[in-house]
Length: 299
Image (cartoon, rainbow, N blue to C red; front, side):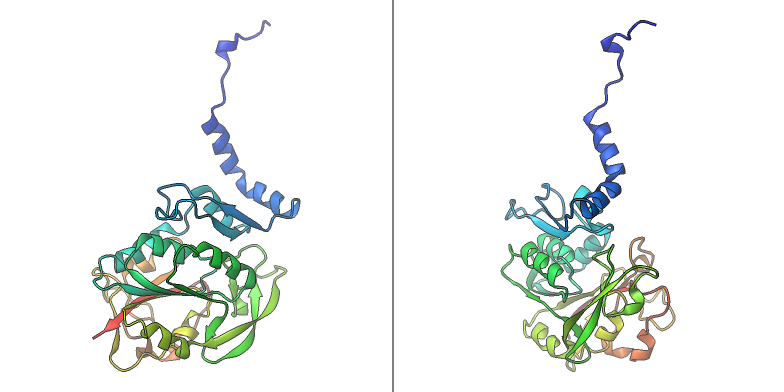
């Protein structure tokens, strides 16, 4: 059988190669971590992506090389875009600006994307107790001079507590031990915890409406019920479409689209944080990844 003419060969395009690369990227990440000992990656985000900052286009983004968040972010240069859009719609166009509070900020994905999308944020507070994640957070928000990054967790009281670490998912670190996957070789470190009520005073001192996001793998309700806004503070609807059309037992009213979000359970709280007793916020099995978002303002 003669040779096939060169022109008849099926050439492999660069897009084919890229598609194969993306399809096997999880395996590549595992090889980088386990064989090459890579622990952190640094990316220059592509223009037009959520992590790209037009005002500082050369600002890179660092994140831990895990098996859950990093593979997606490296390929797309964004994270949880649907939630960022929902949150941006809440704040965008709000006269006078707002203050962002990000509890469980991790490497700063949400904070950076929100600040890059919404110039309305005049102040931001980002809390992350894990030391390596915190270093990434500091790097990733360095373009913004109005961010106060704080290397501790929040809770009812000041303390030093065990912080549990999922070895495969840098977004699954928590004070809540039940958030850890069963059968995994999880580790524990000690971290500082500060009073959420005390921190609230700093947020309110900005004098602006507060956009509050908490993503602490099952510790959110305990933090939320420790926040003590002064009399006269109310928590506004997360968007004009939110209403009491859908409720879960023991939960505040929430936007239907938020409860059905495909990636995470996002609660757009439209009742005062103190309106529900702590027992009704108790984390039940299957809700350890619960995330809370709300926007507050003065009457």
